[in-house]
Length: 259
Ligand SMILES: COc1ccc2cc(-c3cnc(C(=O)NCC(=O)O)c(O)c3)ccc2c1
Ligand SMILES: [Mn+2]
Image (cartoon, rainbow, N blue to C red; front, side):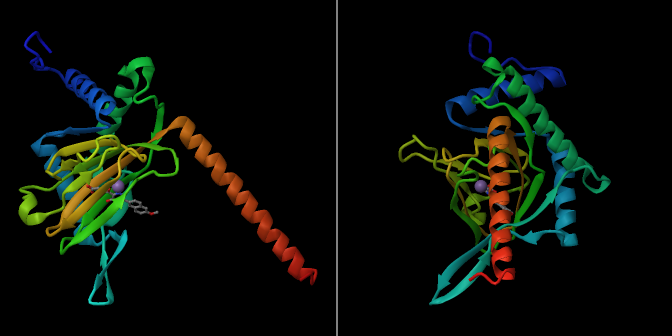
């Protein structure tokens, strides 16, 4: 920023990435939420959208979250989002692969640039596959929830939106975040085309997807904090071993005829 506080127009690709990292670090530290528009630009954004709509028409999406709504005493189950997990490596979704590596570049660079090399005191060392989600419209929604309520290792949620000409009043589908400590204020994020959103995945950011009345696409990546993930895997391993030895005891007891 020059003396008037105007962000200098970055020129090369690296300057753009660095400037974006500074914004992500600043907003995540200050708000725990960060929105960046025109992330890929129109052309690359459109090629990602075409790959996603192509997958959707091929029917690779599975019903994701089950949400139910009481309608005149019978449970009308409205399926929430439909999802598919991809790693973006195969030819049929190379543009989604480009999006993933672009988000990786921002997160990993921001991780390095942040003070003492940690963004939000995390050391990011991995992520999930990309979850491509579609809310098929007709009122599908996602109830208020926390992505990572029990320290499973996920620290940053990154959501890239693909919805052109989206009109919140007509189409709904608003993402509402209720950041901890904001009292009664909320962050309302419209799922606009080529917009990317970052937020802390833990209990600091309960959020909901309000009913959508038009097909609504998003691609989500969750980034892992090294130590939290390691601890979660260790805990999971211990739980599995405890269950295995428990079922062993049951088998031994029943085979030896003990009651
Ligand atoms: C174990 O298998 C699964 C399979 C799918 C899962 C999907 C979600 C999920 C979480 N959050 C959101 C969300 O907040 N979207 C905000 C937005 O689109 O603006 C969303 O769409 C989907 C969580 C857990 C899952 C577990
Ligand atoms: Mn969520």
